[in-house]
Length: 463
Image (cartoon, rainbow, N blue to C red; front, top):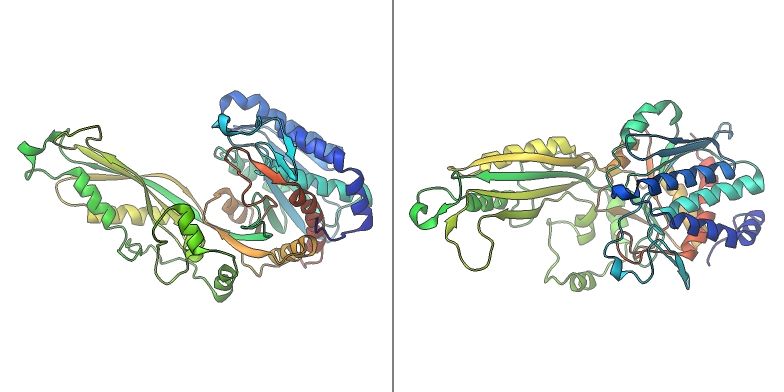
């Protein structure tokens, strides 16, 4: 391990308790807390109870396993660092389903240690990060009797399904969620296991287009040249959404986009990325996208529009000469800072209606939205995290943006009014959401040291 000494007493405690702490981590991983499957309701509740019991055992206060419309949200705090900042720390105890089961090297809820890896569902996402948080708090309270900052802990059990209960719970508990920063502990390192600070997540707008023509499928010989074909019309609509150069043609689509500044572009340029290797791994002939931006900038720093599914008409073997009565497409837009997904949907719908050819009817339905999240690189809490990672892992961390979406992150910004730091210690190739999920034990042990150092760093930042 590269772990720099945080404090001799802390290092001694971690060394003497390593076997016991690893056993507790494995015990947590044995709970099959799959929130998306109703048959695991009791397991999800057992995981919430386990987290609550651990919070009490290590000396945190006001522990509550709060009932919601879904699975419990576990709350605890420690608020005795007078004059120091307060951080709201988030993680989730639920995990993904395990299918396909036959691709696992060992049962997903019977954790095994192979070399320097712990193999189990949830080992990385997100039970590994929760265990790091709990053990960092434990070592500080055991060796010093106090924490360097005030901490409020919020652990939910529905992140892998929809987080439906989180926002109502946050809104109902605003009086005990005040703070200076939110720490979203649900991310990891960059390619090559490089320590990373995630500064942005894209939002999303997801919609369905339904095009209707004749009352049903009709004969293409009898009616061809007489009625509009919904599949042809849908193709024309989709073609009008983006230009040949990759720019999105919806009027006003880019109006609120926060431009990439010099520091943002420098951070992208600093990331190790092999375009030829990426192209070969994907099995594509070229990497394409909006002109004027690098591949990584397009992947995580710019908005997109993609057709996710398209169907209509005859799709069986052989031939059937019909004009389909209906055609459909699902379309998603990944959004970046300052874009409002509801406004984007309205612009999307208006544009689709405007470019629809005559002879068909079109309807556009919004299937879901999520706001983007952005945290400036120079945010003091981000810089404090970078210093902590550098000190413990002995490697310069990188600042990254993720192309995916975690909509509730923006809720911490908008509802709680807190700047957000997105952090975590999972290896980038840890197979989260896939068979044989794993956690790197060096990341795990050094993650505890880095979390301790980070809380110490946060204590030095003016509120």
